[in-house]
Image (tube, rainbow, N blue to C red; front, side):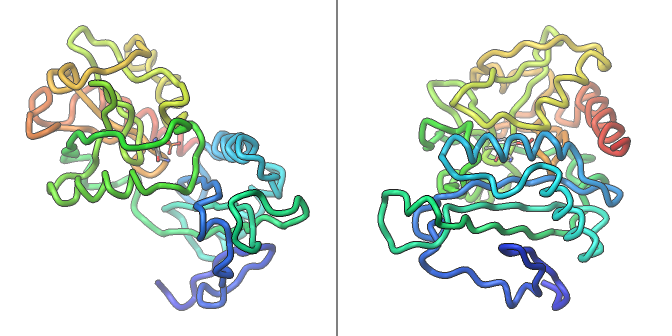
Length: 285
Ligand code: PMP
C-alpha cells in the first residue's frame, strides 16, 4: 500500500490512512451493503456502464438509495483512477446502509449511505495465468437464495476461495444439486463436446456477470452457438474446453477441474479466441 494511495469516502478524496469508517457502519456489522468492481485497461474503465447499472439494481433490490447517477459515479471513478495514476487494474465501489445504532431493522430513511471507492493497480491483460490456464476445484455452494444481488456478504465465497488456495488451484466452482452455479468470484463456462458455448441461465441462483454478457455477445464471432442451461459437474469434467469470466480475470482458460485435465490440458483454441475478442472490445472502450 503506497503512502500516496488516495481513496474516496463520502464525498472526499483522502489519503488511505485518513479514510475511516465508524464501527457502527452497517456494512461492518451486518454486511448490509453492495459492491461493484470495474476493470481499468489502458487507463480506461471497461464495461463500466453495465457495472454501474448492476450497482443501481443491486442497491434497489435491498432498498438502499443510490447516492449518485451513473454520470456522477463515472466522474468520481475517473478522478480516483487519475489521482492514483492507475492505467491497469481495478476500481472497487461500495455502498452500505450507513452508520446507526445496532439494530437489524433499517435505520431512519435520512441515514446517509456510506460510499467508498479504492483502486488496485494490477496486471489484468498480460496475466501469466491466462497463458498457462487455471486449475479449479468444485465445492459445495453454501450461499443464500439471492445471489443475483452483488452483496458484500461474501463469507461463503471467502471459504470457497480458501479451499481453492489450500488445494493449490486458482478458483473454486460452486455446485448445487449436481450442477455448477458459478465460481467464487467468476462465471463458469464450458465449450461442450458438440462445440456449444454453455453457461448457466440467469436467475436468483447466480450473479448476472457483466463479463458473461459481453462474452455471450462475442460468441458468434468465435463461431460458437450459445446454450444457456445447467452444467452438470460430470459434463464439465468431460468438456472440450472450460473457462471463467470476471471483471478482473476477463476470459480465463481452465485446464483442470478436480484434478482432471480439460481437453488437452492447455487453454483451448475457442477460449483463447474469446479472450482475444474480449480484450479487443475492452481496449476499444
Ligand atoms: N459471480 C460471482 C459470484 C462474482 O463474485 C463475480 C465477480 N464479480 C462474477 C460472477 C463475475 O462477474 P463480473 O463479470 O461482472 O465481474
